[in-house]
Image (tube, rainbow, N blue to C red; front, top):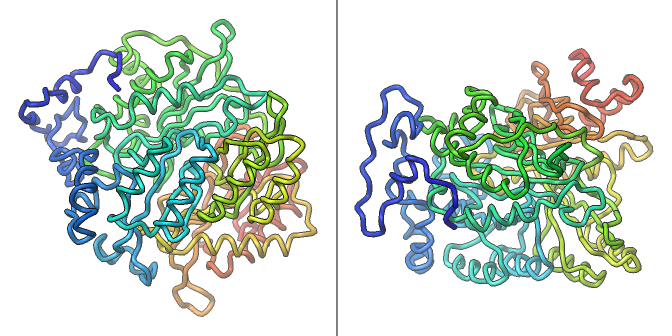
Length: 580
C-alpha cells in the first residue's frame, strides 16, 4: 500500500519509525484555517484532537478485543462517537425520539445501543456469493434490515458491538470490507454500474477503482483527512456517477491525440452549502489515474480547512483557490509534472440509472431493477442472488440511484428473472415516480433526521402512481426526499427536492414536513448543464400533504410547459404562485 510518488513534507513528518515517539506538532498559526502545510498541525477542535491522539483505524483492535466482550457500556466515548466511523459504524437513533428533539438532545441522548453498519462496495460491484453473505449478515445480525444507498453501499441496522468481529469475519472471507466506509477518510469509490460490459463505454474504469482501493484504502497516511472525501470514476457516456457533486471525479473521454482517458473534476459537494465540481481541464491517461487521485487527496489532507468542521470539505478550498491554482499545486507540488490539456466530456448519452433490459457487448443482457427508495431486506437480497444465478448471472451492481443491476443474464432466461424480480418488489419497468424517487435513511435510524423519509416516500410513490396512472409523463421528473438539511438524498439536484423540517399544518400545529427545492439537476441527456434548485419563499409541505403537492405541481408543469421544456427549466422561469 506504499505509493510510488515521493512523499510531501507533511508525509515525511508523519512517517516515524515504528519505535519512534509521537511527533510534536508545531504551533498553529493564529487566525489560520488549520491547514497543515500553512498553519501547522496543532489540533484546533475536538475532532482533530482525538484523531491526533489515536488514529481511527486503530480502534478495530479494541472493538475485537475489548468492546465486543465488554458490550456497549465498555466503549470509550471518543471511540463510540468518532473512531468507530473509520470501520463503518454509527450508533443509530434511539426509537421514540421525535424530530422536534433532534437539535435539543446530545448525541449520547439520541443514540441507541445498536449500530448502523455500512458495507463498503466500491464500484457497486458484488458477486452473487458476496450478495448472499451481505443478506446472511442482515438476517442473522441486523433484524433483516438493508438499504441500498445512493453511494452504492449497503447499510444494515440493529447491529450489536458484540457481533461486529463475526460480521467482519464473514464479510472479509468473501472479499468485502467496512474499512473507511465512514469517517474522515476516502469513502467508497463510485463507479459505473455497467463497467466492462456496456457496449458504448469509452473505457472500463474497473482497474482504476481496484488500484485506488488496493493501494490507498486503509493507509494510515490518508486516514486523517479534514472531513470525508468522495470519489467517482466512470467510463460510460451517460456519466452515471453524479460526478458534479464529488470531491474528485474522473470521467471517460477520448483525447484527439492520446486516446481514451479521464477528464478531472474536483470540489463538488452538497449538504447545507452546495457546490458543483469544477473541471481542471487536465487529461489523465488510465495508467496515471490512481496517481492523480492520490495527489488530489493529499492536497485535501495538507491544505484542507480543519479549524471548523462545517468548512472542512474540499469544496471550500476549491472555491477559494479556483481550478487554475488547484491544478498548478497538483502538478507542481504533488505530481512533479504537468498534465496535458484535455477535451471536456460530451453531453451525457442517456439515462444514467441503467433501469431496464440492455444488451452487453458480449451479447448477454444486463437488467436494471428498481426497488422503492432503496429499501430492501436481507431476505430479498438472498432471493435476488438466487434469481440472478438461475438466470445465468454471478454478478450484480448497485447504482448511485438506489437501484440494482444484474449482469451477464442469459437472453433465454431474462423473462424468468423479470418475473421473479417483480415478485420481490423489484421491477425493470417502474413507473416514473418509482424510478425517479430516492430517499435518505431518515428519522427511523438517523440521529440527524427531523422527519421520517423511507415510508413517507414509499407511500407518496404508491399514491402518485394511482393518481397519475393515466397521465403521460414523457420526461424524467426526479423526487428526492431528505430527513434533514444535510442532503444525503441530493435535494438540491432534484427536480423536486424536499428538505425535512417541522412545519405548520392548516390548524397551526407543528408536524413533520419539508421545505421545497425546485428545478435542480445534474447533467443528463435531458439537461445540458447541471444546476441547483430554487426555493420559493414560504413554500413548505407537510409529510401527509406530499402527494397532493407533487401531483399539483406536476400537472401544472404538464399543462403550461413550452414544447420540449424540461421540468427544471419550467420551474426556474415560472412565477412563485405557479409553483405552490
